[in-house]
Amino acid sequence: MKPSERLYFLDNLRAVVIVLVIVLHAAITYMAFAPEWWYVLDPERSLFFTMVVLLVDVPIMLIMFFVAGYFALPSLAKRGAATFLSDKFKRIGLPWIFGVLLLAPPTAYMIYFSRGAPLSLLDFWRGDYWGVGYQQSVYWFLGILMLMFVLLTLAYNLSPALRSLAPTVTRPSSGLFVTFLGLMTVGFLAMNLIFPLDAWSHIYLFMYQPVRLPLYFGYFILGVLAYRQSWFSSTGYQPRLVVWLPLFVVSGLLYLGYRLTVPLEIQTTLTLKAGTALLFNGFCFSGLMFGVALFRTFFNSDSAFWRSQAANSYGIYYLHPLILYPLALLFVSVPISIYLKFIIITTLTWLLSWGISALILQPLHILSESTPSPRKPVRV
Image (cartoon, rainbow, N blue to C red; front, side, top):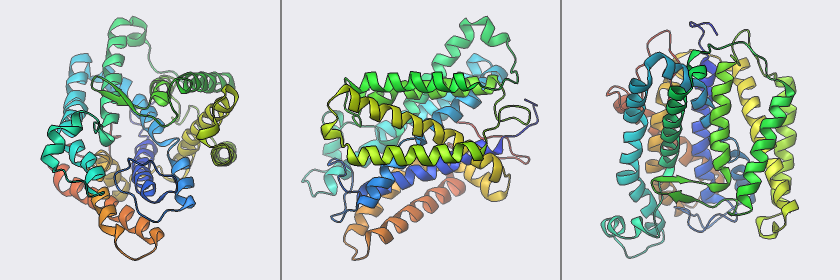
């Protein structure tokens, strides 16, 4: 890949994925069969939002891990191990710790507050948060990502081959895609035989969904490989919309139909769980490739709007729970359609998070980097 080549579409894809994270979290408030523990639940629910949740939830975080892996190796090679880890600790590690200690508790407290529980935030933070109420809100992603950066740095230091090999232009074979999809499906299924599909767990400081844990690492590693083989560069592999759009639509419809007709309650056999694993991973991988093809074709832009979205995507992700859930609670008592409520709280959350990040966090270089022109790809 040419040093001057800018893959703006990857930054822009990640920015839109983060908006989809807001869409996902807003939709859960209004979905039928929502998890009982969700922060704010509107009394009125709709199967439409259940379908939104089922579809949006599959590819978004795996795309984030892939893009992070794609940008990680060149940053590590350029800065060196010590500077790379120091920078990542400042940009990822410290915000993760701050988020877990000070921002996740009031977010988790919304579960109590929205239901009128007679417990103060301070009492919750001192008691239940460290026990039955423990979670990391959206900040779990930063912890897992920081761990991946540490492991990549260790591998880089221990592997002369990884340090010496320069990126090459290598087009991935269909065999690579099939092998990757097979490995992810097997890992997903193996974990699903032990853990429920949507369960959360934690080991020490790290919180994650066990069934998706192999995918976190798999997509990060795939991103590293994609960079090494110069995927998406002008001379490298470029996913085509004519191929990936139909695969994305068909796999999404198959996965959605399977989840609606074969609910989790009856997925007690290996065969039924394998069906979920295969369809989930097929839809997830096609979602990644479709997203890359779509944004490379239509949104490979360095306009002021996309520069701002890319520069503030991290800030939007970090801030949005603090805005979204209070807004959702505020609108519970508003006598309007839940579809209108959804549009309002999603739009307001995006705009307010973007505004706070752009006007306050970015000028102070908190979470976001300055974006000179021409823009450098924004890296998390």
